[in-house]
Image 1: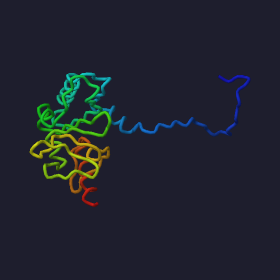
Image 2: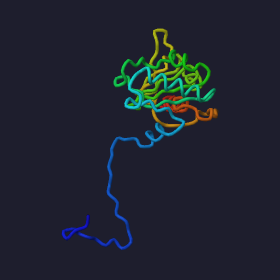
Image 3: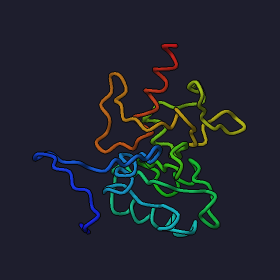
Image 4: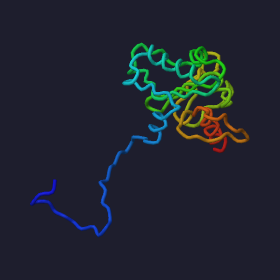
Length: 182
């Protein structure tokens, strides 16, 4: 690669590295989404709704009684994909938390156990700039958007989270605490 027209600079035992600027990649979140025990359900990995729910059922079966978090579901790109409502996730895993995080990272879906652990009920206010989707009776459907589904892991005050607790369970309390302070 070095030729007669190459400029050579002696850095006196120092290193020069190229500057890589990537303004919106969230590499930490991607690492969490791809590393075990996360369940990878990205559209190019599992392109159909049937495959998404097969992979989720397989992960649940492999983790009896433990929380399960699946990452990168995409309601637009995965063919024939039914939205992962609380009811649907309860059918897959009724007795331990399940959380599914959207491909954009701006939405999450949780089963009843995950919502209960996060103290999300019909009476839970929406955090500023965010919302918990609710049914016609005001009950949470399990879908949360923006800061209600933000990517931060914090322990709710006075509560030790279940080991490996899915993100919504840990994030929701932080969003609610922020709401009550302002």
